[in-house]
Structures are given as C-alpha cells and as structure tokens.
Length: 198
Image 1 (cartoon, rainbow, N blue to C red):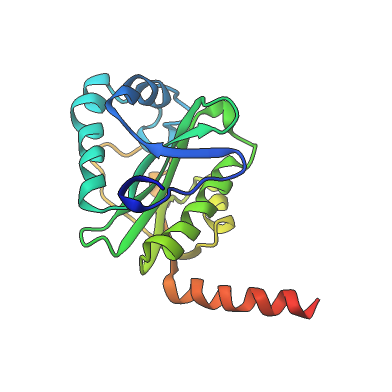
Image 2 (cartoon, rainbow, N blue to C red):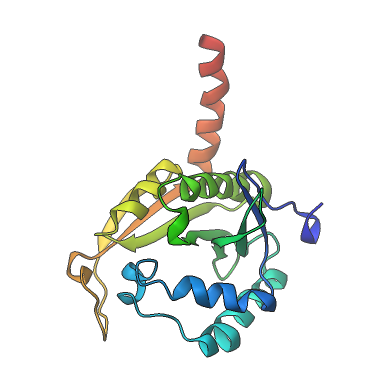
C-alpha cells in the first residue's frame, strides 16, 4: 500500500514515488538542460536555491493537503535511476488536477511520457476520483501536444497571456487540453462492449 493508503501508479517501465529533499540535485540537473527547459524558460536553468528553498518545499507540503495528488519522482523500474517527474498538480479544492511531466532528454523518443501520463490519467479518475484532468503547453510545443492527445486529453482552446519576458513561440499562444470524469466513464463503458464484439 502506498502513502495515505493510496497506491501510486506504476507502469511497465516506470515507478513513481514521492519527492524528498534528497532529490534537490537531481531536480536541478534536470532543469539545467536547455532543451528540457526550452518551452518553459527558453533554456534558462532553475537556480539551486529556487529548487531547494521554494519549489521543493511547496511540492512536499502538497502531499498532506491533497492526498493522492502532487508531483512524483519518476524512476526507471529496472535500474532505479531518476528519469524526471510526473504530476497531477491539484486545484485549490483538489477536485481537478493538472497533468504534467518533465523527463531527462536521454529518455525522449521512447514513449515514456505517454506511458506515464496514461497511467496518471487512469489513476486520477479511477483511484483519486477527480472530476477533470487538464494540461497546458505552448502552442508550438508539438511533442507535448502529442503526449496530451495520446494520454486521452482533447484540445479545448488556444489562448494568449501577457508575459514580462516572452520566449520564442509565445506569439502563437498557449493551448489547453482536458478530459472530464464523465468522458472517462463513458469511454470505460465502451471498451468492454468493443471487446465482446470481436
């Protein structure tokens, strides 16, 4: 049994666990890759102090406020190596979750982002019971948009935000994708019928 009586999702190639303060160096290293941060900060690394003193303490505090939701370290099931993180960041009332991920560049192109996101979508609805899973990215971030679609989310809208320090591609806007609980339940009802028809 996982923390808070809730088992975290796992996949054929990934194991998720809670982040700890011992993950500071791995998180800083992840954010130091310009390609990983391309659509977030135009490649600028996140400073160690920001990760250690601001971001990680905030994430750790979420575990108690919203059991079953949060951000988790993604580990290689075979080697235990830190590959990055996956997230179901909770809304203020915990009834919705923002799907997210950040993985080392060495893992790209292997389908791990899709594998992890699909597991989290299933977990969000079937285990936690959220009413909506959503995700956002830059409109020009085609890779992440494909992951969102493969994870079962559908495109909702393109919108434009005002940034003090816009990065290349900002002019094309941001996109939002979502999947609602009733859509997930409807798809679940259709799957058994489709299997019986074969």
